[in-house]
Image (cartoon, rainbow, N blue to C red):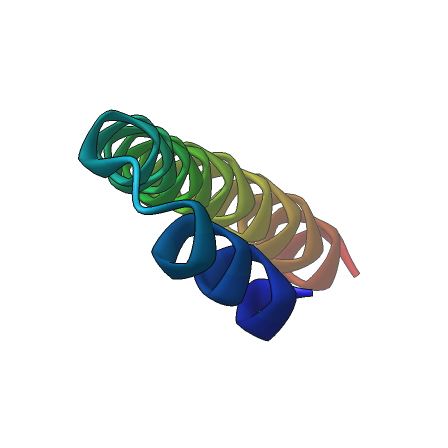
Length: 61
């Protein structure tokens, strides 16, 4: 898919198209990084919560 896209861009020879694609790819990468950071934080919170609950259960027994 990526190869075809680049080939199409170079074949048509429109630098604007290439710039749009590159810009869009950068935005996508940035969104993915932000998403990973967000999910990482949520997972950390969940792990902390689960750990606290397990610790509490163990101390009760």
